[in-house]
Image 1 (cartoon, rainbow, N blue to C red):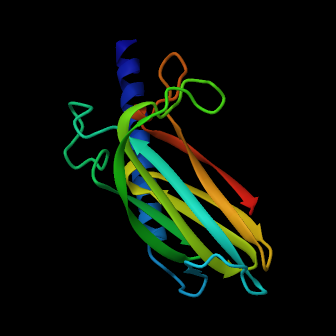
Image 2 (image 1 turned 90 degrees about the vertical axis):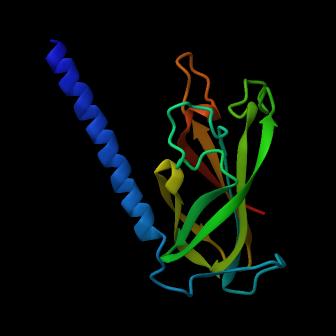
Image 3 (image 1 turned 180 degrees about the vertical axis):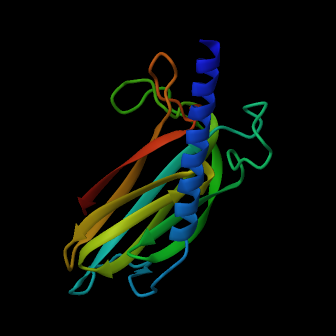
Length: 194
């Protein structure tokens, strides 16, 4: 029985490592542009011209500080001054090194529950303004440091401005509360007209 448990544990670890490796390869391939005419970054968020839409993209992530886990390798990106995010829209890619800031999050969230970002950690926020053609687009978000990626389809109308926000969800403690110290679990995305 112990042998079966050990074999199962080794298989599970192997599958997790293979999954991370595959996701890492996907992020690497998506960080390379196949085209260069899909979007441009804009500073002026005035009304976009006919046939184009503006998209404010926001991604945030909080990690534990360096040294939080004794066995974490020194090469880990968690808690470092910058963190890498990859954005790919319809084959045009951009990699961003986002400056972090140390912060203590609120004890409770907007709904009065224990906040997943309470306590001291390093917070990274990527916010960029894109102008792109009206229509259907495939948005890819890659987080190389956490071997995480998410892809979604959006549709934007000409002459309109939108906000696309990626909200992080962190792994849970045994008793159920999400906590940034446990690492990134997933992102949910919401698109709103502004």
